Image 1 (cartoon, rainbow, N blue to C red):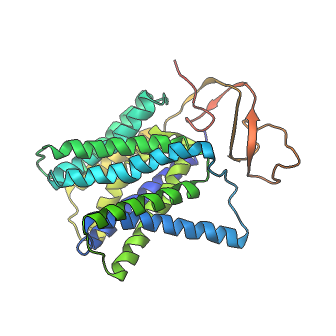
Image 2 (tube, helix red, strand yellow; image 1 turned 30 degrees about the vertical axis):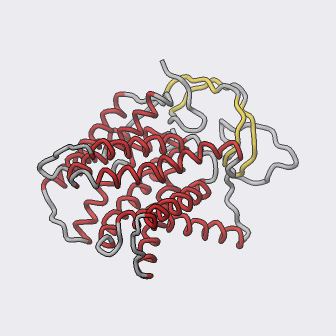
Length: 348
């Protein structure tokens, strides 16, 4: 069972988690809605520079481009994750206390797994559920501030988490395509829309230094993180990638101790222990059974492994890994696997 997706998902969580204390350091001088727009726009502009750099150097990635058929799903990703989630979160933060909002934001991982399991029919076994529960318990403990007064704003925050759960699962269906292109388009579109909303509210523009700082945090904590998250989705599926990504709050909390001199508490250590148990349960997962690959045709980056034994035409690119449209014949075999691009099959 290939494990390449695990370090990708974990690094994605580390980068996103690190962006939280860094963004908190900038919030004293930048409005939250303006900050959200700059973070997204910074990710899009930074990844656009990466794409232009690849093109200028003549080293394009061996990745499948987004196709016309992908655009409706990409539009939903932008609306759900780039616009709906942040706007609902802002509405919720205006109507509830920070402790309740932080507590509820941990529902994103649960929403991602629930949608992947119930709507997308990904396999979720007891070990994965137990590990996810341990990670979620650690995140909830980390967010707990001694009280939680849930008011009307809780519905908005929960709605934001639902939007991001939908976003993660839809993005999983696009994960065969170039992750840089996906993250770049999402960042540019979501950033422009959110900054437009900030402008309609009359939010003042920050200083040039504030803009550059927020954009830099967005490029690393949102752009590169999302690129790695898409690659994790490609190899692990939405449920498992979302479970690993739930470690981001712990990373943010640890860095807050280092950067913002927050106290190192027993609660932080206990949350880390729970998350460590969850991570161990996931890392020790073994899913192995006889399964059937039905005939299918698609396009993505690949090498000629056991799942990619196909003929090539003169127009197909040389070398490996490479990208071209290819067909999979029916195959029945057994090996450890995750619900990646080739293993989204039903289970008894």
